[in-house]
Length: 62
Image 1 (cartoon, rainbow, N blue to C red):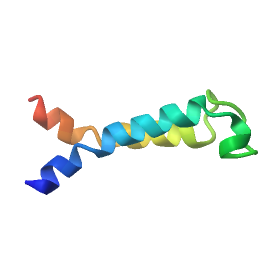
Image 2 (image 1 turned 180 degrees about the horizontal axis):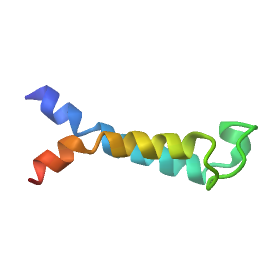
Image 3 (image 1 turned 90 degrees about the horizontal axis):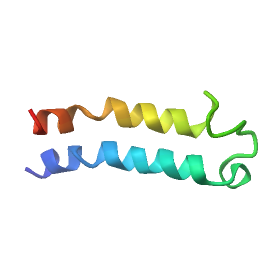
C-alpha cells in the first residue's frame, strides 16, 4: 500500500525540480549552465525523469 502511494510521488517531484531549475538563476545551480531552454543541464534531465515516472499515474487513471 505504501509503495503504491510512494510511486506516485516521483513524477510530480521531478516536475517541480525541473521548474525550480528552469526558474533559478544559472549561477545558483551551476555556473556552466547555458540556459533553461538548452538541451544541456538539469531542466531536460528532470523533465525526462518526470516523463519516465508517469506510469503509476497512467495506471491510476486507467
